[in-house]
Image 1: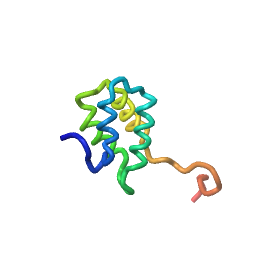
Image 2: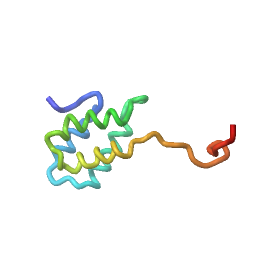
Image 3: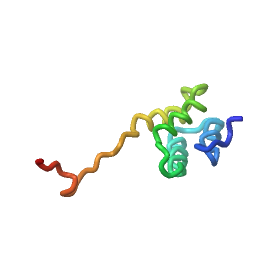
Image 4: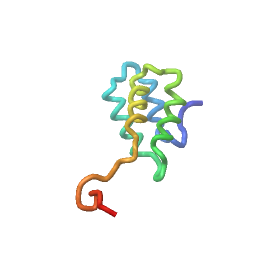
Length: 91
């Protein structure tokens, strides 16, 4: 069964793939809710890949698959910017 999993305890992703006519905007909203519910310390890139493999493999053109791929592209470690602590200092 493809319903509830550890990385999708509310079955948000499962249900998103089942909604007929879902829009990219709705998928982004669901994605954000899902991402905020990930367990503390969970690598978001790994979690996105697991969900994409689980649900997106058979639905590559689904709007949620597109959002998940965008999440993979955008999930890089943020670099601190601004303030005196963020500036490069000579050694």
